[in-house]
Length: 318
Image (tube, rainbow, N blue to C red):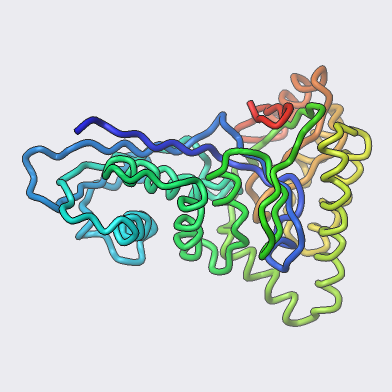
């Protein structure tokens, strides 16, 4: 039996984070410059059913039987095996690696789950569809985020820009004109589970006030879809900045995030905002291609730990 690989890109949310949990739309794109990889190969000298797990990035070297059942890696494997129900499970070794920043809003947890599910189902001769992989990864995401929206597993599993709204069919965006984005890691992170809970607490304490900001983000996202698909950079930049202001009102920004946003705009970005859970993590800056070098330089000088550009082209990301 050959070595099998499962790979999954990172993702970035352009519009709608947090509001998407409350039924509002969101827009997200895959980012292929970072990825999670799962590699499975036969463990020839082990007994049937044995499954070794190695993830050097997190200093993990164990077996499936030794992992707690609530561990996300265990759950991704177990859900896959439950769905396939193999008569005989061969001994195998799973190796996991990822270049996606943890806690940075780029979907590292969903990508790892998706890479594992894809590799394991393929190794066992029953490769899952993208929809099946997304559904299983969503169940694993509940461990990480409590009440996940489902956007991370969807955009990463389908690997295409999406317009996402809970309880509605996923809509794949048709990009007619490219746009350029710079992604900068603040070097700070707050677990998404924590920021989601913080917004929930605000909503429970004052649903009218918090709901106003969430609905505002939803309206911004609706407008952004058309601007993004048509490549209207001016309007898109204005909407990026409006979205950031609403996230500030929800107390999801931070001093470092604000510094990076100001630095990006000073260097020529049309708009900039945090992306993901907030209170750290990444910012995204919409820009014209000729301004990318100066924006990257300014963000690095402002203390971003990692900066790179991504291009959203006609229905693809590179």
